[in-house]
Image 1: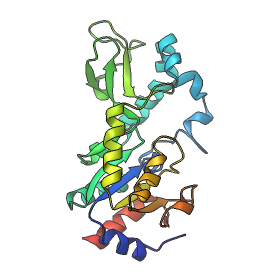
Image 2: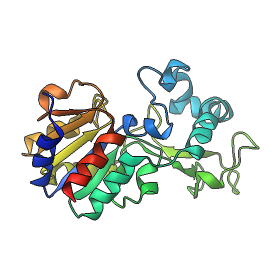
Image 3: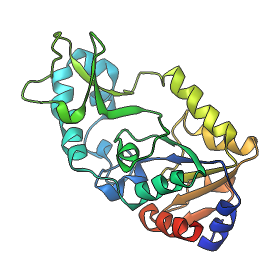
Image 4: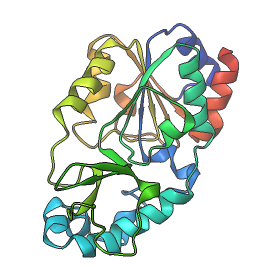
Length: 244
């Protein structure tokens, strides 16, 4: 069911252990296209061909050239939008305990949030496949493909490719936040991709309220406590203003 801003405020204002589960929709307003759906990156290329770990291991130069160079160019220009900034301000109030994000853009941290569980890793950090050294994406030069570490190892984004598992430590942190919250805000995601999709259901089973903030109803809407329909960049700042 659709909720009004006043109804969402009433629920949020009674909550003291809020967790946000965010997805691609929250970053669209920062100029980052989603991977799935209309206008998504997978409309222009086959993810199994360019985003699977087998493809990267077989021909890292090609994957960097076709997919990862495009992502770097996009993320180099992206900045946090009002939705990211509102979640940072909500954390500052002490009510937002953490963010579980399916995004790999690093924009929650860029906005200032400190407790961020990056469910699918991060493209903001690059890792050597040989010595495990890490560096920031801004330090990376693509004059040579694939880019190489000083040790000679191939550099890769520190995100989860298709065919790789979510790190166990990440799963543990995400579940700890999920089971401890009294309200989960599901922002900019249809929550259909597993295992992240299980988190709202896990939170609800533990007694938390679930509120979606999405432009359209999703498969989660029937199982949530309601949908605040619209763009997160417009709605989250309004909600925060009512709370402060």
